[in-house]
Length: 426
Image 1 (tube, rainbow, N blue to C red):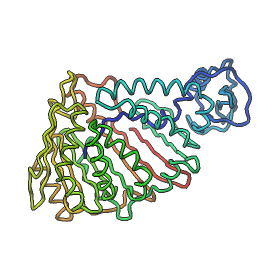
Image 2: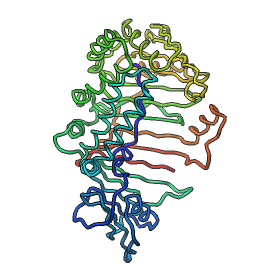
Image 3: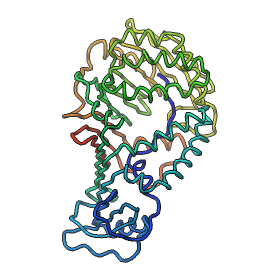
Image 4: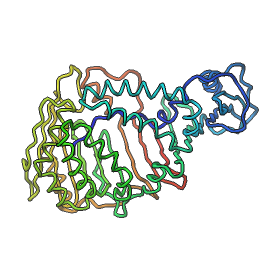
């Protein structure tokens, strides 16, 4: 399945974007859309300055911390309260959007302009860009509570922990999505990471959330198609395609061993029929040309192993003068198709031998489906930052500046309040 190259802002940055505007003088308020608690005087002064506050900060008593909050007019209040570690942020993004309405409007206009320039080079229509920007800025209005906690100050050579909680506004699309999200009863088949640079596993039952996310899926899968007739055909094709995706998937990527992906299917035969249809290749060709591919070749049934036929996709990107660490010499070859009830893909330095190993693992039932984690764990991701830095250095000839952490891991769970995200860097 083809994909669109969409730049995604991190959730904390996105939700706090309107709050980064300058506020006025200090005032008093009994409630706040933003409360920042820290035991670090430098951080407290920085927050005060960011929101336009002036004057000396009262030093907290023993066991207390600096507490900075905003009133309904966006004015900063300095006080003290119980210490909660190095830094905690408690925000109500929907309220912040109202408090900083003017700044949000300006940011939205800037987003449309910058997004339009970036995506128009990929052939995306300006109306599509406006829709994307509108969706980005509408999302915080659906978030009731945002809690960010960092128990310890980030220091060189020490692990970093960050916890983030998102609670939805009732009766919104985000609330409906959180309610519908849950792991698949059968779990997923984990691909062995073998010390891979990047691993990602998602365990989500797609049928539960498909009615909610389908409009977004349709937009993302057709925005790279300029021809109106072909776009209509793509909408019809994906209306059949998505319901047969079960949801759970596993992926690993490494510069040496390449990329491997496995996605669970409801009806493997139905998906195989769609992928072998010439229309599927035609849509991929169109999306690839608009996405910057100078040459895209798709060969159905180019590779066979134990009765399994895989499609070969060869991509050659336009020469931008910039090295692409994920595509050696601007070229990429991918093998993909359906094996039983799984859709697989191998690429990025992985070839036919790697495809055979993955096909054998599935046919011989060596990969057992199991839950991703305890409770309602929906996603896990791990990045070997040392390997990632080495890959960038090899591609660009420039090693990353400064000492990088060795690894970053992230997980997302659903709880009774909404979504909980954990990030650990070491």
